[in-house]
Length: 132
Image 1 (cartoon, one colour):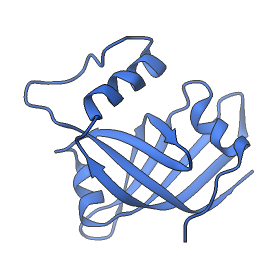
Image 2 (image 1 turned 90 degrees about the horizontal axis):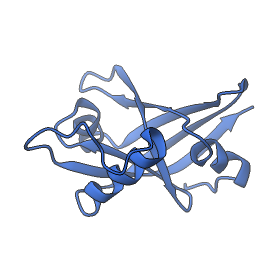
Image 3 (image 1 turned 135 degrees about the vertical axis):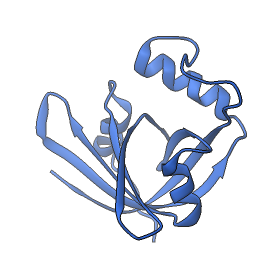
Image 4 (image 1 turned 90 degrees about the vertical axis):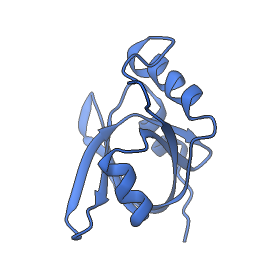
């Protein structure tokens, strides 16, 4: 069942350059964790990735994920979100990674794309939230 993030919880995702740790499930059920950049669309958490990456393949196979973020100035203030991937799309993903590059790197364009890369936006619906 989807949950609504509070404004304070949303700020952990939107204020500053907080890295979010995304946990996905490997084929054998073991966890895989990756630091990612994020954006919000209402209560939806948006992650941008390249379609061939392990985390993207994991989320296509099993949409269950968990995310963790902490406030840089106060590591005791953190948030854990468990949710489900509701969409993976290439539509708008190139512009979205450039938006994230501006936020996290201060650059207008994402500088790390390789020839043939296909960016995707992963939309995550929060289902449970906990933290301090």
